[in-house]
Image (cartoon, rainbow, N blue to C red):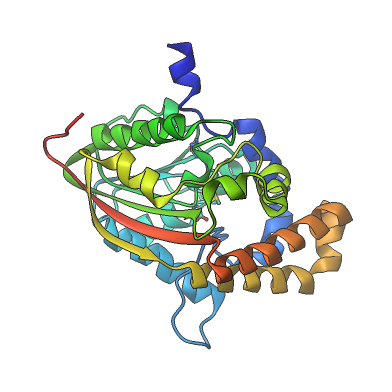
Length: 296
Ligand SMILES: C[S@@+](CC[C@H](N)C(=O)[O-])C[C@H]1O[C@@H](n2cnc3c(N)ncnc32)[C@H](O)[C@@H]1O
């Protein structure tokens, strides 16, 4: 039982905090105003990062059929941009967000909107107070598996996630998921590449990316995949935009986070832009409809 429990916990809270708790003052310098830290949805050359991030959030709210819903869950809520948009613009009654980061929890709690509840808790431990009408998860699924796991353990962990979402959703509910996934590179080849050991070792410890195949296998019999898009060029543009903003604010960033951290983040953002552009990594946005009669 212990082994099974461990096999569904991805990156530990300590590993998540190592990345996300560098400091809110640092992230504020180069993220957009909403503090969205995931791939934006761009339209046209002149689009701004702010507008593209809001469009992404609205896209997921629409895909999850969450507008006007009474109770919505955001798994991996970051600094709370989706929660805020749900309650202030889309008429959601209550929005619950889960994060493992202390700084994100503090930031999102400062919103002081009684309709929003942020919990520093893994989805593995979450017990809803009432069924959810819709679930959104953007940029967190990447952390749900560990590098040392076998393919079977990884798929089992994802299946547990989909099974929980199935249990938590009302009949007819939707889940809108956004995640990075391995692209054209052979999975085994990436396990030994220098870029991978930098990104998944130094930047995102205890983290392993999914393949589309693992996601499809894991949700089988629980959810129907209704739409699937790969927006990897959108993530290349987002990472490129972030790195330009961070370079422009380098002096202030060094003052709040130190030169080593800033150099590491610039390297990671530039490298990520290239990997998305070349198709080594994909950016998947998937809308799932809950199946009424789950199959084991
Ligand atoms: C890249 S950030 C994305 C934040 C936000 N969704 C956005 O788009 O700006 C990843 C988020 O996933 C959360 N996370 C990672 N593993 C988690 C887990 N097991 N349970 C809940 N949240 C988790 C992190 O704490 C962080 O808030």
